[in-house]
Length: 62
View 1: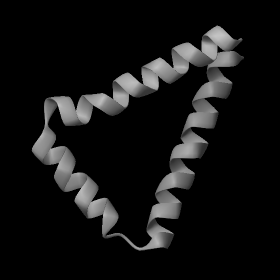
View 2 (view 1 turned 60 degrees about the vertical axis):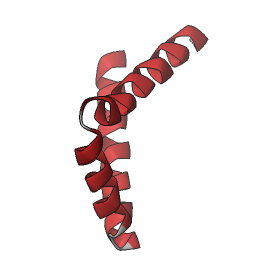
View 3 (view 1 turned 135 degrees about the horizontal axis):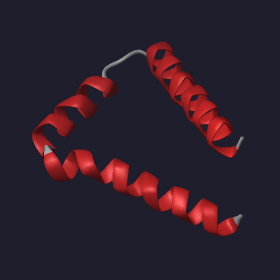
């Protein structure tokens, strides 16, 4: 189980690093726009990401 968590963490870092590696200007603009969003909008985005991640994880484990 712990090996799976490390693999998942490593893949997350790869995916997170692709934006600044491939398109640093676009990534910076996106982060700047996100920083200007109201808290409620960011909570909705975060909630959607959590639900999507949980659904994908559930589907892959079953």
